Length: 225
Image 1 (tube, helix red, strand yellow):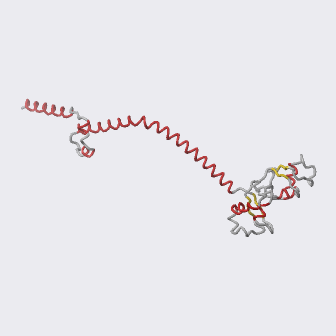
Image 2 (cartoon, helix red, strand yellow):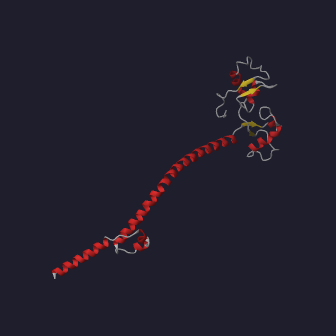
Image 3 (cartoon, one colour):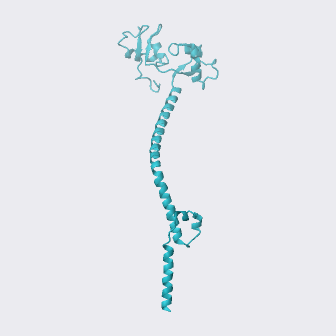
C-alpha cells in the first residue's frame, strides 16, 4: 500500500513539474487576450506568468525602440519652450510699449476760441492743422463731437515732451515754459533760464533760432515731467 502511494506521488510530482516546465512561443501567447488571462483566476498559473512576462518583454522592446527617437524630441521641446518664453517676454514688452504710447502725450488746457484744428496747428505741437484727427482720436473718451470742445477742459495732445526747444519770433521764457511740450506752466521759466545761462545773459532777451535745453529735474511734483 505504501509503495503504491509513493509511486502515485512521484507520478503527480512529475506531471506537475512537466506543467511548470512548459514554455510558450510568442505566437501562442499572442492568441490570448488580457481578458482571457485574467479570467483564468488561479488556473494554469504557468501560462499566466508566461503571458505577463511576454507582455513586459514586448513593452521593454518598444521602449528600447522609441527611446532614441524620444530623446531628440525632448531636447527640441526644451528649445521650443525656451523660444516660447522668450517670445512671450517680447510680447509683454511690446504690450507695455503699446500701452505706454497709447497713454503718452502732453496735457493742454483749452482756452476760449480754440478748436482742434487750431490746436494742431500750433508750432510746438504739430504745426499742421490738418492733423487735428490725431488729437480727436487720442481724446475720444472726452470728446464726442470734434466740432465741440469747451474752454477749461484739459485734453491730451499725442506728442512727446521736448528735451530742447528752438526759439521762434515772439517767444519769451515764460511763454515757452507754458507750452504743453515744455512744462505747461509759465511760472517755471526760471528752470529754462538756469539751464541755459551759457547762452542767455538776460532772461528778458532771447532770440529766434536759439536752441534751449529743457531740464526735467526739479519739475513740479506729480506733474509727470
